[in-house]
Length: 639
Image 1 (cartoon, rainbow, N blue to C red):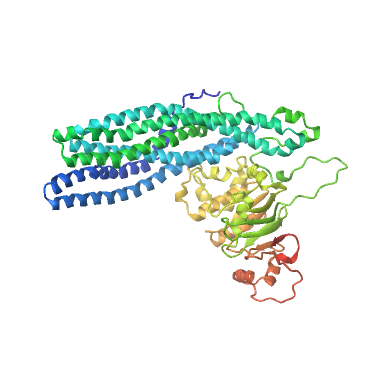
Image 2 (spheres, helix red, strand yellow):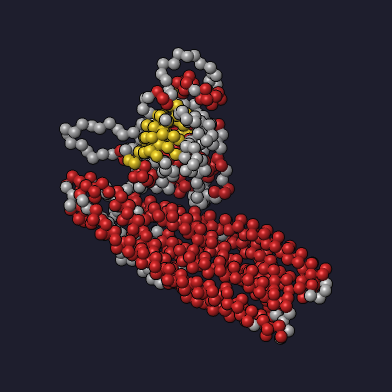
């Protein structure tokens, strides 16, 4: 049963998981507090040293004492720089595990529902896994940093004011407290408005995604006006939520003025009274220094962070921590769908062909190319290519030279293609384009007959990328291996552990892995075993044997040689290609595509790369087939 939502945006449901997380990260949090105490000392000396240098030194005619206090001020500034470096190191030990924890929750909940739930998949989970987890990471880091800075800066400044003269405290504390109180009153409404804005954005994004998948059918049936009419209230709802959030932001600005600027005005107005009652010029200047250089920036940063990043953090954490209980959507509002009139206006054949909103999270190697059973008299179609690039051009920047220039390439189903070449030739760029993490300036990319844009909606059903820097999260080894294939059978998992020599990490099945304690080889083997378990039709592997010794490298190459997927491998190690295996050599303007033996005849660069395999440096001229990209075979061409 779904628990009622917190309608006023209060963060109380987040208190328990926040405290549990803090207990697990006591070490980094303690280091953060220790470095922050050094920052308090710097803040204290910022004003106190000014007062003593002026009153006890220069105004008293003792230049030496004044200079010594100024040297103390310089030393405090240097110590503050050291404190800042320590703060950021300790901050990473808190925020990165938080992001890992949130990703694990979203992935676990999404995969569980994809396997067990008969209802259409919630496309907003893509936002929760990518954009919203990054929002939570960045917002949590910003909030923690600014709250910490405000607390310890305030301690140093207020201690300094009290040490100078207790009479100074009311002029600073009263307006500061008034501004903070007004600001605190805006937190709940702003969080609620931020949640409304996020709800509206998710609804609009879900509707846009479903419309995009059915664009051809909408155009064919003339239903565009109906779709536009249903999109209008979703757009209006998002605009309304944005305006409401802006109004509360104006109140926040007022609170900022009270807390940050009113203390300065109060001190200036009271200057004659304070000086006549015995306050020294140095003490007054120090008080203004505390307010303008310490408290004002700290309050400004605090109110800005809590008013923007803080409200976003509360809303996003409600979403992410509710993934496992289903409390992620707005109350009582169903997910948007295309108008029923779109379906009823279509011919029966078109309605049958309409794409559905649900895509399975994990597909078998043949699912991407699956077609409806043909009628008895319909001829059987040949299988679609696993990947095609047509006239693809890519450059890193509008004025940069193309890394890939009008490249044509066709990779057949089940083929194992090896991509080699010098650094900067475009090997990793090619994988990024196929993975959808980069987009061509010109040309088209298809995966199994789907455009790369459509393939992105299929997730791991389309392809799996093993990047150069593999990602391992803080969880048991089994969770790391199966988060793309949660239903992998136990014997298959055991086989993966044995194949990739991970038994030492599997000895304690319940113990979470610590990514920062793993060697590069261990992280690489975990990523390879994860990809090996995945029944995807297309595997993209970037330097898969980096950091592996000779034995692990041979075991990896043997394991993937028998994998049923289409495999495209980028490698500097240059593994020996199998008989008949095609190799793509990216070499500047002219790529080469052919077998290992043919490329030895065709390319001097390839012969140089292959020298480590013991191949002859020179070969005869009796080649029977040209492998140049200009050979016109239609498989690889870069014009």
